Length: 315
Image (cartoon, rainbow, N blue to C red; front, top):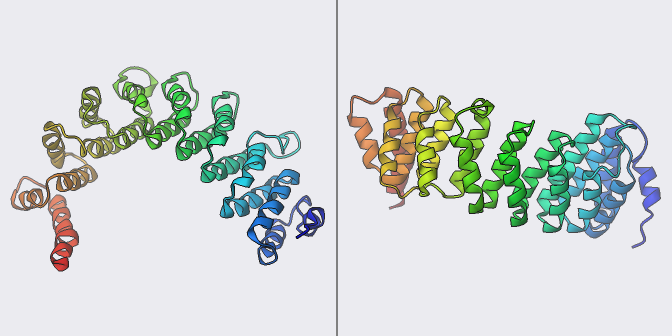
């Protein structure tokens, strides 16, 4: 089928300012007229030629629904800022479009995009939202080539954006490469400096260590143990979750101590972890021991009602 791309561009008002909803409706209509292969070609043409940021964002959304790898090249052009000039449009609109391109690239899971993503990630002059999206995309794509650059970001205490370090830590957890362990633990071990104020970074680090199944590493175990005393309840919760999969005999008792934590959510998460580790016994113990809070007893009863009774029904 011959496609008149230029005519379709005019019909959908791709480069006319305003009336975004009209463009969206017109582009959506194309899905009833063309097959998927043709739609990809049309969307690619629109992406390359569109000079209206808000409309380009909508086209990327349509492209992302199909997730065809033929879309990778034009999406990379958007990510690298080749299609829109900041001087001509609202800077935030341009940044948001590039972030959307990074997310769409991540969904394609094509390792040939790694170099472009790393280029943006490593450019400290780049907007932090774009670098954040690239770090996340690298984790989702899963290419081990990205491990070392992501470690560098996590370790960089001069990095102005703590959010970027958080995203890099999360990406390392998704990549599942043991090379990241030392750098991640290093953040938990830091006692001085601004890093102590960056609670969310520590949370992401603990989540990553949990995904890496590294709790049996002696250095990791010590860091997780210290994290159970952190002032942040969420950090304590994340440490519990990371310790839950440990084969270290001390883990059970450490988590059990959290049943009397000052925070109710920490208590509940500790109970769930212990139940996953040892089963029904801990629930009965909590229900029979007056030393545990009423809220924790209520949680134990809920677990029994939700899981134990379901098992009985299955039998």
